Length: 333
Image 1 (cartoon, rainbow, N blue to C red):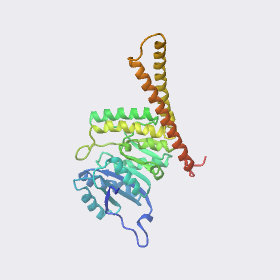
Image 2: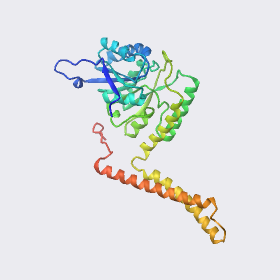
Image 3: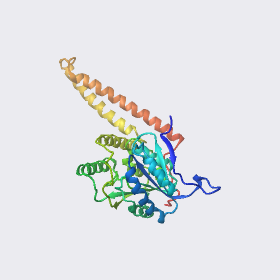
Image 4: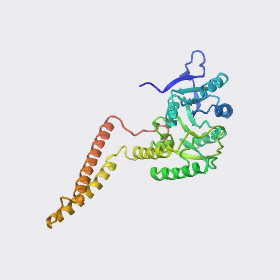
């Protein structure tokens, strides 16, 4: 299967005798962009003006997620005067998670900054997030204290954040903020696909990193309109279930499948016991729906428990080869 990456343009040049990968980079900024050419021409120069003076060794990765508005051409032109700007172009629109994962795979900085390309995330807030990393966090999310979005979007986002915090047990008020800063180690165990970019803080905390939020300014979109439609809500819901499963039951799947199976088996056994008593009393049970329901619940329950035991066996065999426990040598007890 071929890679979705089509080409990389406007890459920085290496000094003689030094390969590009050998160049040290302190900060990598990743901007996923889909038809944001009119915004990037304003956002990227502002970003360079903020990052450049503080962290001269930096790179800006614009992941063109299949844009049709000339985003690559705009960034190529910017790259001529700013060699630290690179464009990674995807063949088609794969979605924000894939765009971010593509950026993760190519970023070389010790600190990774994520921000949206629509101009709502303010580059001037990035130093505040990096300072939070210096204060002990591994991942800092920019919490939009006053969001410049439509009422419906603000309301649904507030509901989403509450549900996510309740289901995952990770504290937070703005999981889906596009503005984040993290240490390089954070991106190593994270694999993004689907809509999992919404749950980066959850995945990071599950991996053992320290996450937190910092209040930041949020501006109205500069040009164009949002690319996210109503479908993102139900997709996000299913991905929340995925994240809950990955972060809670990956190492103990029998707790999920076995629990469901035991509950269904108990219901089936109760129904069959009732039918047995009725039959002993001389009643007919052949046409009773409870008989079929009892058999169905019992069979499905046993199947779920069997599935849970097989999953536990797979986890056990995998742990014999590779341990999930990661010791952080940089943090003395």
